[in-house]
Amino acid sequence: MRPKLFPMVLAALAALPGLPAVAQTVPASQTQESAVEDPVARWQADPTTEFSGAEVDLAAFQWVARPVIVFANSDADPAFQDQMTLLRARPEALVERDIVVITDTDPANPSEVRRKLRPRGFMLALLGKDGDIKLRKPLPWDVRELTRVIDKMPMRQREMNQRPLHD
Image (cartoon, rainbow, N blue to C red; front, side, top):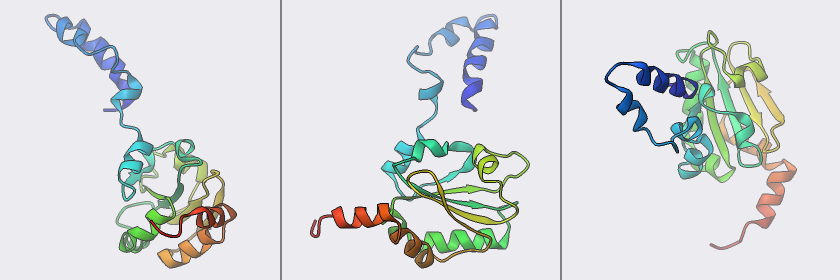
């Protein structure tokens, strides 16, 4: 259920005869925000989680993760399938670099992510932790190529220099 619909559904339930007690039993603490799980918290709990563009706000990941967004006009697009296979083949490299994978294969219902980046067909986009677009590619990219670009970024260089040598 969409979070914006939650209060309207409660109001509709309260208006039905014989159901006001059910609608009133929902705790006041269950607001629109708590009804939907926070994508950043989900990603932090499991950094291999893949998200749909419709369920994330890119601003929430700013200074937390590097979004890699894979766009296509359909999840059946061969380039999309190839890209996802490449990303799923090396999850440890993505986790090490704080990469969150976001997909958007529904141009008929454009997400905020799609409206912001305006892809045409297949596109791979890499955003930095600062939220700026660092890379756009019209073809699938191997994780090795992607990590080389990230490892050259100043913020990533600082992360590698500040990392303890032994755990």
